[in-house]
Length: 387
Image (cartoon, rainbow, N blue to C red; front, side, top):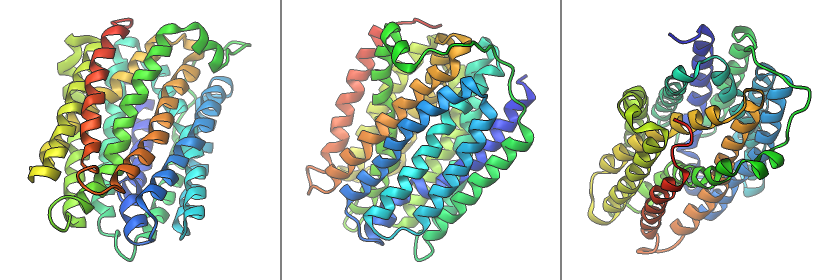
């Protein structure tokens, strides 16, 4: 049994990810095909989210260790809602990038505080299961958001961002009212991230590994919808079919999150991450097959869903168990910074490939297959430092 406060975080995360589902998969399609930005411009704009997210994650990790998880989460929700309001009114590259910068700051503040709160509320034996549970809330929220967002992709697309802002505001209210600050050990002096990275060699290597994982997620969330829209078949897939495929993807991640973690427990944390790398490579091969040989898109997406569920809770658990309890927020901020770096690099690289003619655009997925192979080999070096 999990601590009752875990369920407050579950509800809060479901709400916040519901809004993200509205925007995450549709922003590239909307701003390229309806607003008129290039795929590269959209990639740079989405990369701006990751850039400001770096500052947010640093502040979120330090602030949650110094002032507590709850106040940082409430602040994150407010800033994220403001960023969504900016995106709702954007009509050119400058306003699009600015809205993403604000949103990225809020999201950056959110992740280390949220992940640290989950670790505070669980024992080591419960931790991977608790992360799987809260990640399933992310998937359910994204799935509902993707399904409902498909209705608004046309002329009503600005409502995607308005509703996203509203869900962030509701999330902040749920945390403010329902979450009690988790008990944790505090110290008078907190090490900064630079000191931690210099002295923890294991964490240094893990950062490289985790940036590659998040680079894969960035391609799945930003480049893949646009690829399906503009490169698959003679005229690309319809918005309705893309919505259906990504709804399947996120629902699979919700349904398979806890079963996959239970089944892979004998592999240990590192073994589970290696299995994830294998699934990423196979999934990207499937997507290449969709573009080149009309393989059904659901095949590749289903494998990518398995890769995602094997990765997400395992990575958070590994870092939480590596971290000293009093520095848990800071360690998880470093873990979250990998997402900023992955998403800083991912959308511009994906957008650049998709601005190229075929067959170069299809080459994106084969580059990712090679990276997934290298990732699996690199995980051998990391070893089973934390069981």
